[in-house]
Length: 362
Image 1: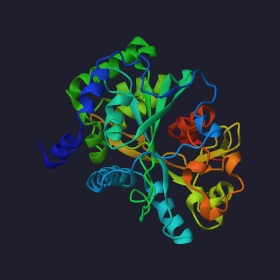
Image 2: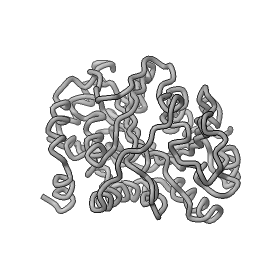
Image 3: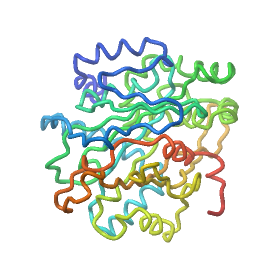
């Protein structure tokens, strides 16, 4: 066993024994956690925070905090090495605003079948103090997602992965709702993974697939039915996107509209699906994202083609109405709109779509 594998295994708590039993359940069965709010259909969910502020949970012990941050920093390194747009935008923001970048959330994609779905990654985060919040459903895309809130973020001294801990957003493809042909392709590859789903976090830190490298024709078949499926087949557990919390910046680009202009003025294309700015019905969660980068990938049959990689997102969370009179120095993250919005997220998913990657104008 490698040092990295041993470290991840040692970090797993006894509670994982219970959670791992859930992996054996049918992947399309509802995921249940105590206190988890479940949404339905395409209506907006994640509104618990609009009714009341949710104070963070207890902080991590110092050693656990250091280890956890080292792991997500390695996830970030793989992400930045493959996605020059994200790397450049982070550098531009630092040069303009100073070193004040905080991540709102990190997002991952999974195959919701045979233990390769949300639970394969969530167990790592819940072992380190993350708490499951709301479930989101995307029937048209055959997806669902859960988001997780971090332990206490007070007293941080750094930025990025060493700043306030980000929320975690994990989605999964409801494989059993796909055509028989697509299901067979996905099952074929995950069968080559052995127990790779038990090491999803480790796979994310290395950027390696836990299953056999696919052939190009299988990638094409999945792409024709679900671009999410095709993306996951070739990217695995790699970080799908990181999100800058614009409201934590200190210059004028803390306003997301100004931030979007800053990004476009520097020559980057933003996801235009549903408009550049995606706004929740309550107006308190505003999001945008770049279009994903692409890179050449050599498939198992020797064919080399361009595939979509990842993108970077931006989010501004406005103050909840009951806290609108707070002074700036009094405002904490839990005074702001929390959670996610199905309508926003549905459009953000399109950042890796063929339509957005090939779009030439706004």
